[in-house]
Length: 565
Ligand code: FES
Image (cartoon, rainbow, N blue to C red; front, top):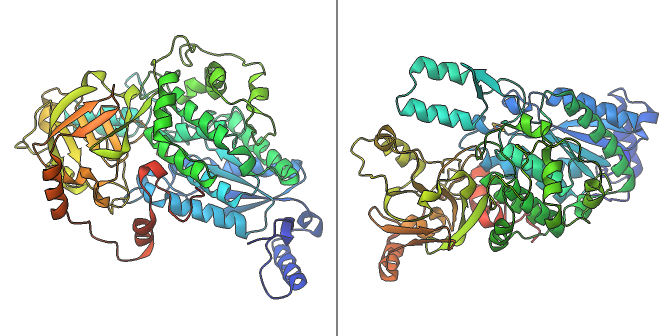
């Protein structure tokens, strides 16, 4: 454990049995990089660099880091850039979620083990911001979260496109035979055309808003587009602020509290945020010793309407959100529901921030509280015999015609089974059936991938079916749309009832009652439980650590040895 009374280069000395020798040696090796004695006396700001050729969403990280350095130097600090793991959604097998905790551990350990008085962590793609916040909170050294920002939209044949709600829409059209091979290749080249994160209210944008609401990112910075000059100004300000909190000692434990977490939960609902947001917020809060309850989510969800009219549940994109008032406009509309005495890394309270002039707000993009985009919170948790510890439905992105329904189960035993059979013309499936995917949860070996947006079976898609109840212990992309029940807990691979569902069972869904039940007798379930066999154990390495220690969705899928609750 480093001695927190030590500062600058003298922090956490390498142990050679002689402290003075250790500092002399460290200074000598630092001088090998050209630093002067004067520079080495300054407060040190570590900057976590997540640029990678495997991460398109972080394409602008190098120029952001240059701007952070400018801010650090201007404020009298010494910037020191260090690499960490970088996670991009589409480049990781089997899923980036498997590596979020690894990145959080890397971030925590490198902040703790290296001499720095504060850190600026630069991230944007879905798992990077939660991983960095989890790591920074556990390290509990003054830290600023800098977001890479959303990408800009592009055009295809006169139509505006943005990843990845439109990725899915066009893919569904291609599957239904409405686009040919040439057309889908043209779309593929136009979905993601600039640096930055997906430009809808997907997981990356949701986490950016959560980071700002928690107080860990500078006010007004969540929605700035990746390529906008304001993004560089935000980076410079973040560097400057990092030096100030290095001096004042404003640590994350003073910022991320029960109240700021509840504010973030409200914002998650008011922005129509991603279902992944609840898992990540739970994990972030858990590092600060704060519990997020799914029952409390339901209470808050009924009081907090969706105000942001952004895809996938609305019409606009993140660049419109930025121009239309951004997160500040949302916070003002729900001010009466927020804890205003929470502190941000600026040292200001949320109340102080919201007393300032709001500037221009576009009411079509950030709706007034009295005229919301959707009258209730975007997410709701469900409980029942099929999910004793809970499940999540994004009601704002679903067809409410299916909210009170009962159907016959059509079961897939794993993502591989689903990929093999979902388009089989002989699949026994009807439009009113419930599609069930098993063994896609945290311990399944698949790492809880974003495959909960189960495709409409090919034969139903071709017949024009647009939505069907889909149930799994997987997650789904924040950019997806449909009546999709996710994060079922306990998961099938952990012996949960989801793994005992069989073809032809009846399942009843009642969103009104927050229930979700498998209509099979207890006697029959006991028989199936006795016949159940666990998934194969991972033999070695990180996959084994993950399977042995990952917690279920209601605990944020963090490792049991990392949570502080
Ligand atoms: Fe990085 Fe969507 S792929 S945010």
